Each structure stands twice: as structure tokens, then as C-alpha cells.
Amino acid sequence: MTNWPIYQGTGVPHDGVDRLPSPPNWRSFSGGPVVAHPASADAAPDLGTARRLGEEHRAPIAGPDEVKMVNAALYLRRPLLITGRPGTGKSTLAYTVAKELKLGPVLRWPITSRSTLQDGLYRYDPIGRLREENLRQLRRRDGDSGEDTIAEDIGQHLRLGPLGTALLPYDRPRVLLIDEIDKSDIDLPNDLLNVFEEGEFEIDELSRLPREVEVVDVMSADRGARAAITRGRVECRAFPFVVLTSNGEREFPPAFLRRCLRLDMRPPTARQLSSIVEAHFGAEAARNAQRHVAEFLQRRERAELTTDQLLNAVYLATSGSRDDESFDSMVEAVLRPLAATESE
Image (cartoon, rainbow, N blue to C red; front, side, top):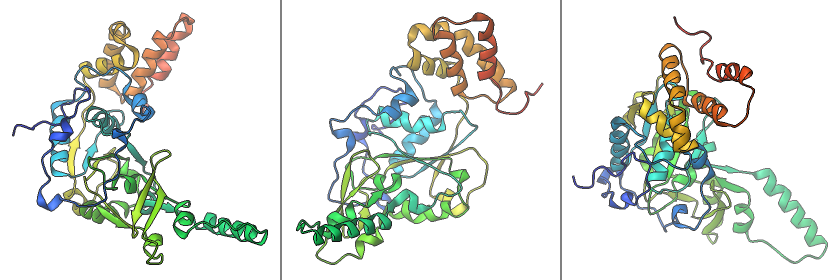
């Protein structure tokens, strides 16, 4: 298989996604007309990716298991469910894939116990639309003859969510991060099944409009972007690269697991930690921070620590003048274990 692997885990952007073979026939979708992919536009750099990854990822940042499962998900057009302890880089993997394969800004859907499928697909504001209609009636009584069409009116009050935006008919995949799915209500994983399987959904408020109102321009989850929806149907063309993260706090239904590929994320190695430090602070700071990396690894063997805590400690160590007497206590504070006490 000469195309393998598309994602190489180096962090160096390339156009390998253009070599992605056609999907299997049971994962083929035909949505349209094609929507302009944000990565193809002359857009500003994605600040979310820069915050997660830093600016200078050049060393290998993904292990062989991550590379293998990411490519399997890309080839099969299946969601990737990543489990692991906090701070192992589950969410960050979505950003590394988006950056390396040049797939544009990551669409992030943070899950809480109150999250519903509707939140991910779209939000409609009927109160805002009613208020707008009342203002329009007042303007008409005052002699203002300007009128919005029905499509313009409802389009101002409907916004696609992260999942709904990811399912627009792009010519290449979007990256969707469904973060901490294990915190969801018990019904959400089952509610996602049909959307994952069919790659489409219907917006009831648009499908019920008069027949002459065929296309409605609505807001999307991308900042400042809009999308044209035809007859209230959203159907993907390139199935998004979906990353679902879980801290292992619950079990998922077998039907949900059957539709996902699974990856158990291991904590970053010393080499990966050094690469992460270099990406955020530069090569010289990474060399000077080796003792902090070594100390972090020793502490991590005894207690639960996250990569964010290491970055905080390195920042304090490289942030210029400081009171050395209080510095050690600050480092102790930021490297405090997540659990109540360290194991002996």
C-alpha cells in the first residue's frame, strides 16, 4: 500500500491527505454542492492550534500506535475514540493531525453532563427571531418599506454547531474534537450513532419553510463563516476526522464502540516531552530544561501529573528574573500531583 501512512506524526505540514484513497463503499458520501474548505482560504493562523502545539514542532511527536490508528481512522472514515489518563495528549492529537495534514482549524465540542446531540448539530434562536419580527413590524408602521426575505431572516438566527459544521460537504475532511465524551449524559453516545453512520442530518426549522425557499445561508461554527443549506439537509462529502476523548470514567454501549476505532493513549515519552518543550520555548530552552523533564518523569512514576504542569514549570524556570528563594516553592506548587497524595 504505497499511500500508507498519510499521517506521519512528525508535525511537519504536507499535502499527504490528497493521496488518501477513496473510502470503502459503505463509508462513501455524496453531499454537495462543495463548500470551500477553510484551509484553502487565505485565513489567519489558527490560534487554538498554536496554543496547543507551539510554533516549532519538528521532531517526532506521535508514537507508532497513534500513527497507526490515526491512519486507520482516515482510511476507514471512522471516528477515533482515545482513552487515557489526563494529560497524555488525547486532545492534542486532533490538533497535530489538523496541522500536519493542513486540514484547517479544529472544530472543538467540549462535552458536559448537559450536552445534547442538538448542541453539536445546530442552535436555533426562536426568541431572537420573534424579537426581530416585532422590530420589523414597528419599522413598517413608521414607513420603512425595506423587507428581509424569509431565508435572510431565519438565517440570522440559526448557527451550526461543531458537529454540524464538520458535516458540511467539504472536498477534504475537517477535524472534529469531541472532548471528554465520558462526561456526557448516558444517551449522547447512542444519539451520535445515526449521524456517524449516515454522515447527514436535517434542520427541521429549514425543511419546514415554504417550497420556494430552497437555500438558506446560516452561520457556522467557524468564526465569521456562513454556509448555504439546501432544503434543510446537511450531508457530508468527505467524512470528518473525528476524535473522541475519554478519561475512562465510564463504559460505552457496544453499538457505539462498534462504530469507532479505539486507541489507548500512553503518557508522553522523554523524547516527546522534549519535543513539546522545544515547540513552545525553542531549542535552547529545551536543552536547558532537560533536568526539569527528568524530574517530571521521576515524579510521574509516583503520582499523576500532566504535560501542562511540566510546561508551567519550564515557563517559570525561563521567565527571566525571579526570587530564587520562592522559586522552588512555586515549582512544587505547579507540579503538585492531581491525586490527593503521592504513592510511596
